[in-house]
Length: 55
Image (cartoon, rainbow, N blue to C red; front, side):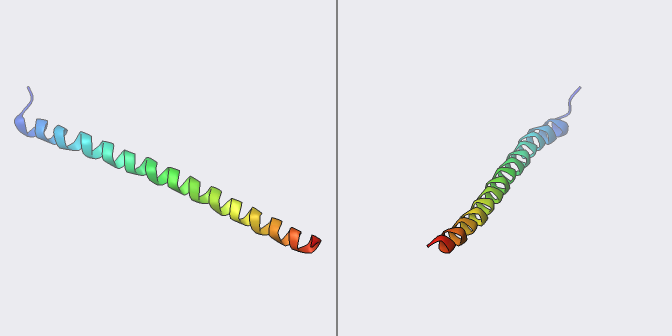
């Protein structure tokens, strides 16, 4: 038998847990995008330096 208190806890906990998981996924994607952007910036700086030697 479910009590009203436990039903309330489930009604609050499940959406809260889903929200935490969603935020964690967003943070993970943003960190991956940041790492990719930094890698591209390093590569662009290397290519600029190489081009400056040629010119």
